[in-house]
Amino acid sequence: MKKINLYLIGLLLVCSSGCDVQSQQNIGNILKQIPTGGTPTTLEIGQGLKQALEIGTSQGADQLSAKDGFLGNLAVKILFPPEAQKVEKTLRSVGLNSLADNVILSINRAAEDAAKEAKPIFLSAIKQMTIADATNILLGNKDAATQYFKRVTTAQLMEKFRPVIATSLSKVGATRYWSDAALAYNKIPLVKPVNTDLSSYVAQKAIDGMFIQVAQEELKIRDNISARSTSLLQKVFGYADTKR
Image (cartoon, rainbow, N blue to C red; front, side):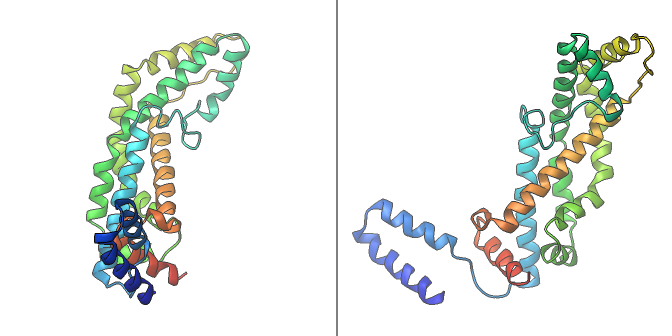
């Protein structure tokens, strides 16, 4: 590998004066993809893992907080609460499709609003991470980082999400749509009245969705070499690859 690196570096030096711009860029891109060898120090492991998690959690939070971040993602899209799915089925059976659709749209919009609060919480958890935490995560299971975040951020996320969810549910009309849906359902003869705490349900599902997204970002950096965008990430996760 070292010989190949030296060869490419020499070729790039030669090309700096005699090759076209595209050729120089291509060689430069190849060099960037070659992982830095050697065993990382404990400091590098800590820095590399934190760098990876900052990238992953930021991207995950940004994706979910965008319009249709929840609604357009089947992995995290929030549907009627399980105990209220009979409500949706019944409403649709009597021609109230738009009412059911409005409930689903509005609760997902509320979750997208809440997701904006997640990034600083994740970044704070990353800063507080010890070297031992980082090493255990790096060499642990493929969802080790996600499990760490679940352990140290769930309570904070719920604390932040619930008031945002409650405000957003009112803002986007979810509370009204849900009340209308529950009222319409409860008027149907012989049905058991449903009374779901919508704010708590949406907040929990939004948090679940955040962790699903974080797990996907974690897996991307662990398994996809091209996602390791810096030499430090290449070195640290390249080392982790040799330990599996």
